[in-house]
Length: 109
Image (tube, rainbow, N blue to C red; front, side):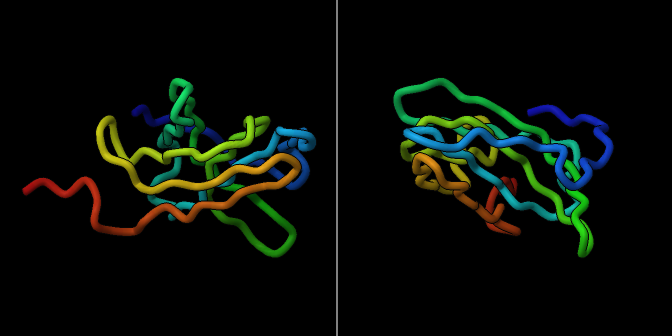
């Protein structure tokens, strides 16, 4: 996983092409993950990643990674190379949402 220094995205700067068997996913995170790339995968596909960015909207801002144009299916959201943070179902024509866990993962023992 990599970290990047991306600036915020403004309202209307992310375009999602939804319909048929194509959906999208938004992974909501805390601001401390800004710039981190989060990987997702469908069982039959390889992993794809998106960077967490600040998203400015009319009423404030939030942090998220956005995955546009996803084929419908069950996706694993990866905490790290080996650990799943959870799963989410993506349906055609719909934006799926996943909230990044705030604790319980990636803690060295």
